[in-house]
Length: 97
Image 1: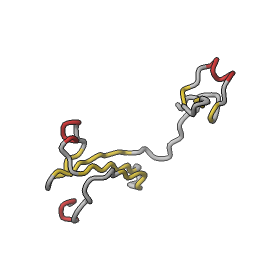
Image 2: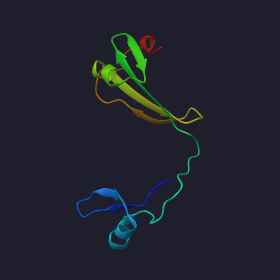
Image 3: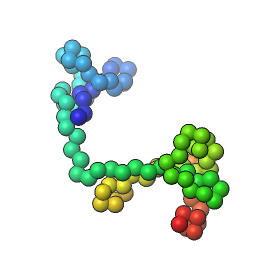
Image 4: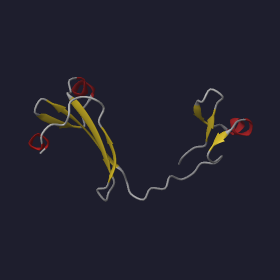
């Protein structure tokens, strides 16, 4: 479920309590809503270190990475999101294979 949220004068978004809902501007609905998903998203984060690609790295592995990439697909294999912050360019296709 998605809870109702309120927007403060400072621009901060918070989950709205019942009493807060009566006195502040509400972003969206004042009631909880069910999240409607057509497909289930599947996320995978990988790191590139030298010639190795490591899936689902822990904090220690992320600290020595050269590049990180997160990909989100739905159950139909449709790309929903791709995130690659800075780092090296994902080089040649033979490395990725």
